[in-house]
Length: 446
Image 1 (cartoon, rainbow, N blue to C red):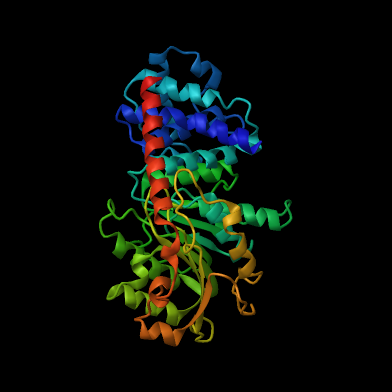
Image 2 (cartoon, helix red, strand yellow):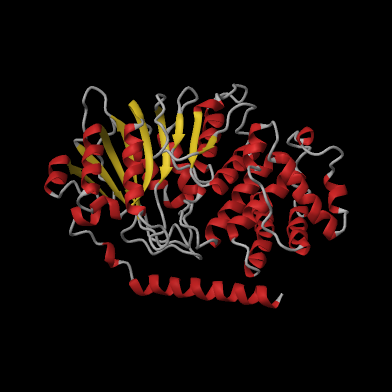
């Protein structure tokens, strides 16, 4: 069913490309599609009591275009005042950005393609659409990792049902959804998960709405708790409740996000200060904060002193397409009894790897060797040092001599990353650009 779900998600996302040509940004198209999806699913999600009296999706779509357009905004006005905390969050300050009745018709027609989707497949379908959105919207300053990368981070970190799991920059809530799915799989399905232990914070209102919808469609919700709050962890008053596990991505588009370097540093510092002793984290960070001097060096030193940074995964180029973000993943846990970082295991997925992009995307098998070498211990305390291809152990003494640099190419001057055929990488980039141009031309001709 996976191929069918992916195909339907692509069909659902297709009108967004047309509306973008009419001046409606992709992120607002995503929000409008989300609102309509929940209206269509009102019965399945037991939301009928929250809607207007006598609302029925099939009656709604049988109205004329102009009548539907007027009724749609009326529905949005009602839902943003809902007593249901999830709906009130998803429809907070809701006002359509569509300007013409026929634009709403395009989205409704796409939503109608999903009539045969089973209830337990909606979450997967929505996640697939979020992947299409992430690969389409190159104007978004936030860089979104793929679900494949998110799942790997969750699997090796092993969150447990009695732990407080946080994401201080929750984005579309994908780490929280993945953590919840992991715990449901690894524990008895009949056991109720304490959803109040899932805590995300997202400063961008639109993204917080999408995160709540993503959680709702994956049954990560209860009547009183919002899994993702609209807030800013860097300016809010600090909570006394610290985390057992933190997942997050601190990537911003360099060309569009001013002061993103400082934001990533501040968030990284916030993360390791918000952890309980013994808590663990898996964080995606941009390359640039791993070798810069000044404040970046101070934050890295704090991380090495207050936590045990045991593993750094160097990610391939192009996996965050369409953003050209270079990144690493840091795996660490908060020190207990003044324990500090003594040695770091670096695993290099970037060297000898062709650039990823539109055509060549990160797949589970690309991460299998790393997962196997990482082992079953999320702390990697008792893992024996093994001779693993493209991996290196570097001591804290060596790091200190290099200004606590954590960028592998600077720590290992003999790193052979440039041996990948650069002409091949450039060819992939040309093919990506050509395909995008052809798809745009196809849309104009349709």
